[in-house]
Image (tube, rainbow, N blue to C red):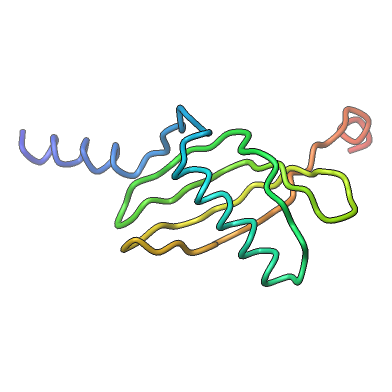
Length: 110
């Protein structure tokens, strides 16, 4: 019985959970970090517009997977999926990718 309970806890700890309040101050801080860090690394002037949605996964730290609307100076806003790991009170940007929406016509062409 103890082994079974341990397996259930491990599965729950590693699963993704939706973020209920994407306007939460800490979630916005994580999002702002991702935008600032990506802008710094790519030499871009980016501005966080909003956090669209997100989820977290707890392991040795907390992994945030967020969809952000971001504005680049002089351009329209675009949506990005970012992954940030928070470990020992430090944030680490793992990925920053543009959300690509495939149109119906591109699905038919395949």
